Structures are given as structure tokens and as C-alpha cells.
Image (tube, rainbow, N blue to C red; front, side, top):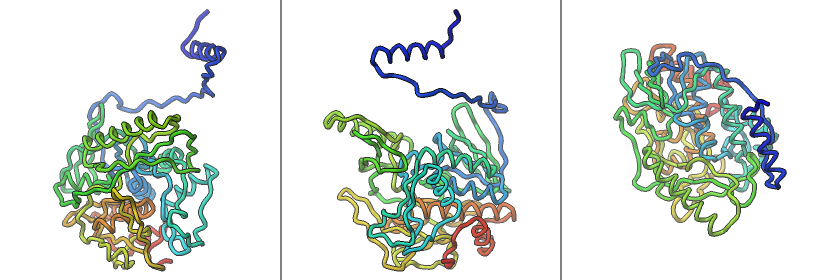
Length: 420
């Protein structure tokens, strides 16, 4: 009688169950992955309108917006999934989409959050009510579902995703940029008209030698895990380990932060007992490099709710600086909602280059409120719109008429400061 590996596994597992070990596979399904054209080639070339580097909270939304607006888009992400802090980092309760009883951030980011919650049969906070604590209106999402829905929306928008790759060099050309990316078994040369840096640390900006801002002191990273009880994604928060000194500057510092976090969690398990039920793959980082942009959002701008002339989205969250002594959120005064200017997404003196997300040009205290997911999504969508319009018109984002950017964003569901 012929046997194969599957039969062997099935009989073996049934045998161990019979011995009382309780080991079994719930189910097995199958799918066949189509052959990848040119998979054996080491070097490949791409030509696109917009290159988005970093598929995290901001980058995913930037890529979808650019694709929906008609640009050819490549999204390069060094990890194995989209979502960044919301998925790989595990901070799966994004906020804040509302302020003072009304929704102020919507668009593609909210569409993705809303669909993931609905598909997961979750619940939403009531944005019509002003909560006593800001986190009461953060939205619980299933991080695993959010990641694969992000991929689906990218595919429908025509966005090509390149996982496990990252730029090694960036060179200015007559028509935009030449970006050489490297992954295992892959060297990809990308010629593009526009770049959106959504790396979280303005790493493309750094490769170009443009100025970046960073303090000596850093907020702690958070390593998220669950000990002793089951984690229900989209339903509950999990345990948080502050990793003080966590630094996302480069692969060496990230490695050190992750090893430190895991070592500490292992020691806790040995000391306190209980089963390790969930562990995120890496530390979630709160801050890294920020750009020096065409304007810098100060904490006074943020606290006062300054309405910038070139505002492209709202931002609403307390001034929220985490330190070794903890965190004491400083809520904004009633009725105050901060705004994000387009110029804060443009590295000073640059052309055909934008950032979106926590690398926004801002001082440290302003950044502690700007860095959270909902405003990062708003920035990402604005960057995707501006970059696409610039690519189509053969200009740079700062020279695109602001009205055109606003009109495109509204077409795709975004809320522009002054609309509400």
C-alpha cells in the first residue's frame, strides 16, 4: 500500500490523540500559487509613477490612494505584511478618528478600519459622544484581518507589493528618481516620478542626506504579548512591556530592542508562570527620525489647533509623551482640533519627495500627538493624492494647486479641515 506524507501525518496525529496527547490539526485546505514571471531572475527593473517605501499605517493608505487616482504604484515593505504598527507592532486599536462629538478623519483609512471591524463582527464607539478618556473612542481591530484586507485593497487599486525589500540607494534623475532595492534573491531597480517615504524614520530622506530631527532621549517602545489567558484579536488589549531605550535607527538597534523585550518576557514567564498565549513579532516604536520640512508643526501650533493655510487633514490626540515615569496625556482644550499642513510632508528644499506618518516635520511634543494611527492615515492619503497629481502633471507636490489636492481627497472620502 502506497503512503504519502499527508497520510503519514494524519495517521501519526490520530495515533497521538489516541494516546491522550490531544494533538490534532483542525482542518487542511489547499491553494495553488501561480508561477511568478521571471522568478529565477536576480535583477529586475520597474518603472512606475509613484514609489511608496514602507507599507505601515501611512504607507498602505498612500499607495491605495495613488492607485485609485490612476497612478502606477509600487509599494516596497521590508516585512512580510502591511499595517506596520497596527499589525506587526500589534497596536490594533487605532485612533482618533473623532473629536468633540464628530468624525474628523475618514477616507481610505477609515474605510479599511470600518470594513475590518464589520467583517470581524466587532463594535464601534459612538463618535457622537465625547468620551471621558480619549482611549474610549479608539477602535479595536483584528490585526490579522486588517493586514489581509490591506493587501486586497492594494490589489484592487492596482498597487504592486514587494515584500522583504528595501532601498539601498536613491539617485536623482531627469524624470524623478532611480531607486535600487535589495531583497533576498532580488535586486530591483525602480525608476519613478515621485517617492513617498513612509518608513517611520524618514529613511529614504536619510539616504539622500537631507536633514532629519531626533532627540537623544526616546520614548520607550512597547512589546505586546499575552500571558495566562487567551488573546481575542479585535476584542481586548494585551499586556505591554515598555522597552526603554528602544531605538529603530537601524537593523542593529531594532534587533537589540527585540532581543531585550523577548528576554524579559521569558524571565517573567519563568517567575510568574502561566502560558505564553500571544507574542508580537517585534517591538512597536513610538518615535524615530522626523524630517525638517518646509514648515515645522510646533506644540503650540498643535495645542492651539492652528488652521494652516495648506492644511490637508486633521489630527486629534492628547500631547502624549511616554517616559520612564509613565505617561500623563495632556488633552487638547474643548473644541480644539489640530491640523497638518502639506508643507510638513515635504523635506525642506526637495522636489518629487514626500513623507507621511510619524516622520512628519514637527517638534517632539507635537509629534507625540501627530504620530498616532488616524492622523497618519490622513497624511498618507494626502501624500498619495499630491504625489499622483504631481506625477500626472510633471511637477512636484508643492506646486500642485492645493484645491486640486483637496478635491481629489474629497472624492475619495477624506475630510478636509474646514469641512466639519
